[in-house]
Image 1 (cartoon, rainbow, N blue to C red):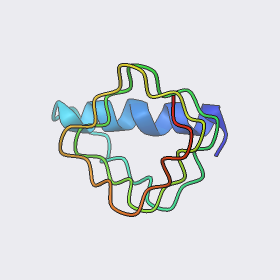
Image 2 (image 1 turned 30 degrees about the vertical axis):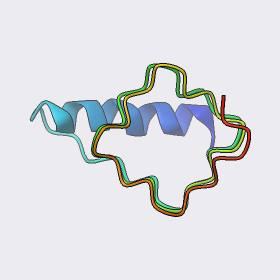
Image 3 (image 1 turned 90 degrees about the horizontal axis):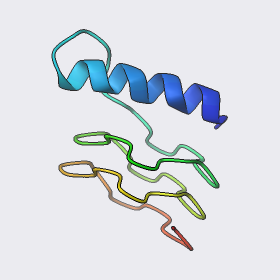
Length: 76
């Protein structure tokens, strides 16, 4: 997934979290390899089966996110 597309999904997810429209982030089975998710608010996001290898998750909020079957290889 391109970083630009991911940024739009994260923006809409933030709106959804605060009841301001938007949509819950559905990143199930997404290829997020090498993406920048620093300080991303991923609370309650659907990340089932996502490839997060080499992704930067420093400071990311994953509380309540669905993290089943994720590839965590070399996550930063």
